[in-house]
Amino acid sequence: MKRLLLLSFVLAFVMAGFAQQRATVSNDLRNFAVKKIQPVIETNNFSHEALPYSSQDLLTPEEDIIGTTFYDLQSNSSMQNRIFVYDDGTVGAVWTIGYDFPNFATDRGTGYNYFDGNDWGPIPTEKLEADRTGWPAYSAWGENGEINLAHYSGAAYDGLAYSRRADKGSGDWTFIDYLTPVGNEMVWPRMTTGGVNHSVVHQIALTRPVANGGSIYQGIDGALLYSRSADGGDTWNMQDILIDEVNSSNYLHFAGDTYEVQAQGENVAILYGESWTDLGLLKSTDGGDTWSQTIIWECPYPMWDPNAMYPTDTFYCSDGAHGLAFDQSGMVHVVFGINRAHSDGAGGFWFPGVGGIGYWNENRPTFSNDMNALCPYSDCVYSELVDDYSLIGWTQDINNNGTIDVLDDWGLYYLGFSSMPQIIIDDVNNIYMVFSSVTETYDNGTQSYRHLWGRYSGYGDFWGPFVDLTSDLIHIFDECVFPSVASTTDDNLYLVYQTDTEPGMAVRGDEDPFGNNDIRYMKIDKMELWVGIEDNTAIHDYDVMQNYPNPFNGTSTVQVNVRTTTNLSLEVVNMMGQIVQTVDAGVAQPGMNKIIIDGTKLTSGVYFYTVKAGETSVTKKMIVE
Image 1 (cartoon, rainbow, N blue to C red):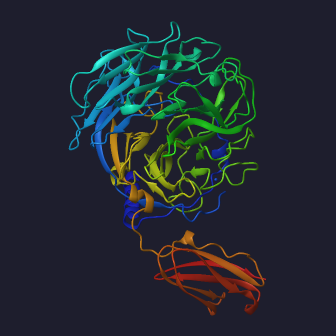
Image 2: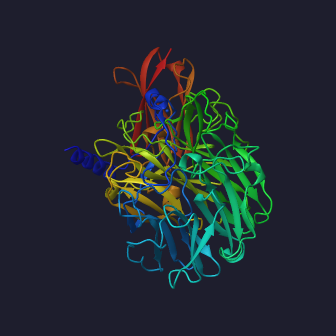
Image 3: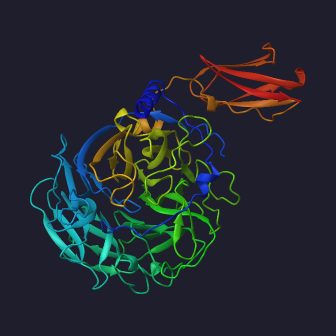
């Protein structure tokens, strides 16, 4: 019965469309903390003001199911580069595949599919590699080839596994083992290609942490190492380099999947960080020879040691899921998930009801180590985030009642309510952001679902509507997670992501049993994300601001955000329903318009004013003293 009611509810929204405002996140959600476990390698292991441009629009991107998997953990935090769109319109994509649950003893590895310009290949049922692997990262290689990187786990080898071929989509794969430091095998890798014709491979990976059966490497529990190859992994001119800025003089640990790497010609950037580590950017402009560091957010507990924990206060932080992109001038832009953390001396805690998406670029000041510097709520003292400037994503108020209404349980990701952000910048420096967020009105009766949301910006200076990318009816009972957006774009954005009928992950021992998960490819028209679905409504409720000042005894101003050119007027009525004042604002142009109410002609009391724009109207209450 509940599903039938939900279906009817969603159908009504599909018919009518709906717009979103910033909503209150209860203190119960903000303050609910859960103890974290170690990242998985093996199976056993808001009171906010309404924002006029914060709206949801319905669209139906082009989608295809390109793969399936029972192994539903695609990342512990951030996503690898999982999709590449080539200049000729072909596409390659990868994911972690596995069906032999619960241990996936032999069949876990890289799932791969290829779009030849007309069709995707058959859904694969077997991994690329001969032995057990996981956590693939994919890119173009050479003039017309492709390359994939994964880590061995529970295999005959310790280290990383490369798969490559000179002609994408066809021919035999060449397999190359990357042997990592003895006793410190590397896991959770990332890889991208740069240089001329994507000829240079840039690789980062973590030495296995102590909690996952590894050991300390050069003073660090989980050292972040960089390597570079100019021939697709046959030889390495830089191998297992511990960059000075992230050595043991600066950090004692790094967590799995809390880092990314991107390249643009000779520019290379590495982004790293999570609750207990600064959010930091390493950038090279000479192909990885030398590096500079920027601390985007400074953790208030530097050199925090996971093997010698001590109690801490609660603080807002990066949650470990983030993304980065170069613009056309070579400047780096960053998006990152937000959460809270504290330690009781025996373990670290996260706050599943806290979330938001932060934004930063190299032209902006960095964030401090104040406990509230990354607080995503407008009532936080000392928050350094600014709505629609450095805070660009949050959970949407779909039922438009001013609060976030979700069930008491959500999927276990150890990330924020809104997280898993991805960023892409096109050839004219337009910015597009995609993230996954727990979403009101979508649930299975026990847990609330996550949907994918998108937003557009003109170079980060303003941000357009929120768009539910997965609002189509096919996703009513889908958990939409782990998006990976292609770094190249044309008139469209391209991404892959995972859907599941149950929130959370069976691999982590969440509530849902093992079952089929779809790997989906999505193609999004950029203009639809930019302007939203066509809407001829002149004003919505959130377009009419409360008059200010209120109460008043002189004049008061009503600001109205008009969506289309239209006649604009205002009527004031008293408690008897009598019209006592009218204001004709004439023909209003799209954008913010002002209407002045003259209180000197009104007696003291409560009134209602109605703003009329074309065929639409909005009514609010005011008080004259």
